[in-house]
Length: 472
Image 1 (cartoon, rainbow, N blue to C red):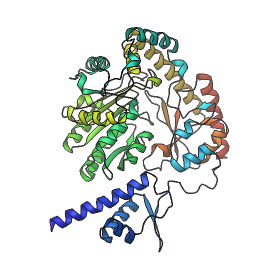
Image 2 (image 1 turned 180 degrees about the vertical axis):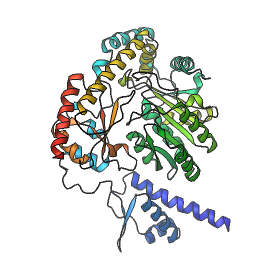
Image 3 (image 1 turned 90 degrees about the vertical axis):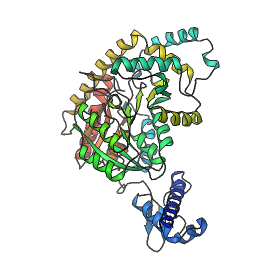
Image 4 (image 1 turned 45 degrees about the vertical axis):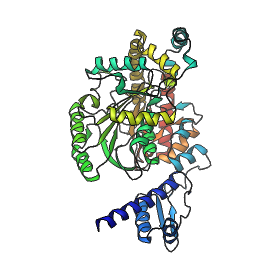
């Protein structure tokens, strides 16, 4: 009897994965009818009840929908009640239909409040130019060879020593993997550890690219709300116990998009829960050095003794976005799997980028640069907050990072605000983009890091004006 149950479960999973794969690869388009239960059962040589069970779960996961007496169709991501939107605008149309950031970022506007990047004028560009020449003198054959898949050994040894000095952790160069930015690291982790229907815990809201990456792998995302004081750890434990997630993706330091930072106590408790319920914590740490008053707590991985944390440290945002350098720290058994997947992705990140980053990272100039960046970003945050103070909007002032997470009045539709703002040459990130459930319609992310001080003051005034005119 148990053999029959196991075989049935295997066939059900096979059908579910097959259909999901076709949908995720866009082989079956939105609103397209998929094979009937009878037809797919015949094609896959399984019982019709097996196909029906898979279709019902796909419907529960919002991958398909049913029309009475017609069949099953691929679900659309287009929100309802869009009659007031300018869907002829390709940027708005792309956002509405896909909820992706790329089209918003590419909008030709004057006031970029959607870009969580640092104003290029704040970076030491002339210094970089001189430094590149020195790197070619030190490594004349740097363009004639590949890096190793795991990353340049000299860079890994330097970063290892940095982490040991900063956090007093036990580490060696073999514990580090160099990736082309944190987004590649997240993608490698998803490809390595996640199969369709695997449960992944996610903060709500969260980093939009990570949501898209895990969803593309077919993960079933279960959300945990993040608040200014952290998580409800009872909810986290309940979900770990109930759903048995393979991993929990989290961004606990100057969280994107909210700016919240998790306490030391919660960091320790998360490690204990992860170890108890055998759940990997994926700690994405992209803003650690961008603090205003005090340095944030040590990363979660520094409290980990059982190898339950994969730590991603990106340096792209504030050292040099163009170099795309990030480091992953994890235990050897996990590292071997990641290296295998990395070798298939690009066979190693560009060596020139790593060498340029290495020598700048090791320089005294970097520390001077970081101090200036913190002061400049704090001033810009305060300018944005001062201009928003004339409204009744709500936000928690962050202690670091690049963003404000702002709650608008319920009567102000975000999609319409996006349309009108782009017409006024202003961009921002609607909250739905950062929500795995696509429901945070009264929230927006405003980045204060990309525009200069004059642009911030002018742009936020104009943005508030657009919003107030819509409210009236």
